[in-house]
Length: 93
Image 1: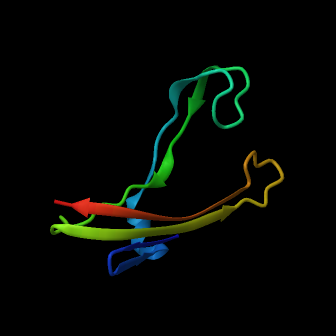
Image 2: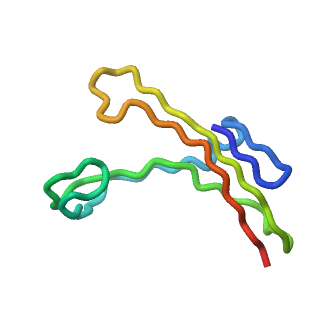
Image 3: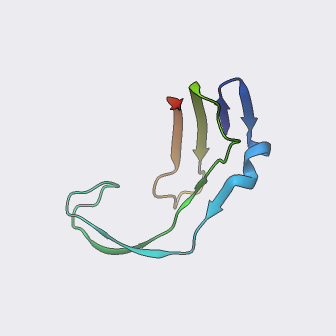
């Protein structure tokens, strides 16, 4: 995982402290929804992600670049491969 905010770069070893994994919780999926759900209804889910906290940003425009991937070699993985390479623009006022 790699994140760049303006000129500051963060590598995985810098970001691991921002990783949060929840206990399971209840959601209700609609029919024909995301994640390949055909018939909706109640389900248990978890959240696992990086929630990065920065110092307050001075007024200005900040490009943010996020790049990450996950490859699961276990044959039982439902969605074994994931990759993201995205750019955002944040305007601080």
